[in-house]
Length: 188
Image (cartoon, rainbow, N blue to C red; front, side, top):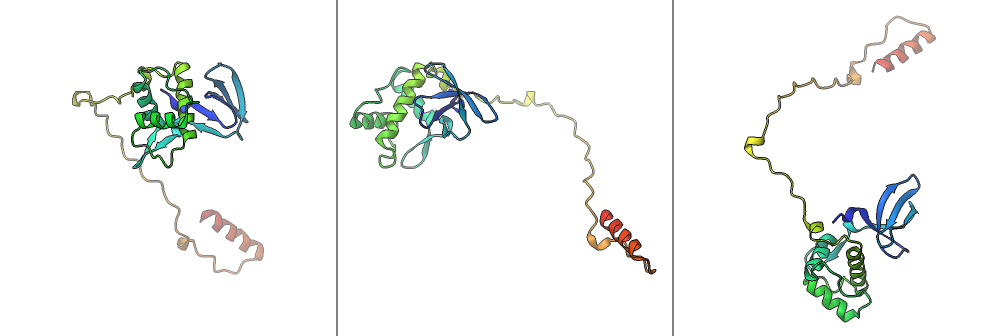
């Protein structure tokens, strides 16, 4: 599941996918209706990929919590987000047993259930969606050594200021002195 493209917008119900970026904001698409809209840069947006649920010893990414819900409910709809607080807490204890009861509020669980059901209805909750792509492993036979690049000499550093050429000892006119000083600055 690509949670990095799914967002929640403060003040707007539902979830959205990012379509494109504009100079003044973004074009988003409602995952329920498919309607596109533009939002400004000043809108408060939360990427689902950046959200986690508190447990007693760590924070569990939303992706993993959604995976637990999907497995418990066989990739179907979960309980209604308008369920009682006791039902919501029992639901949460079932999908994430060690969630922090003090820091995860009933409103948080309600939002989690609502988001899960929206994603499920939108076709985002499938077995394939939760399979993480494995990085390809390289065997010894597949390793191909590339020729070593020749070392390039390091970039020359500017000479320290102490090595400036000495000023001429002959007495020069004031305009000649300023020309010498400006030439010295350019060299240093």
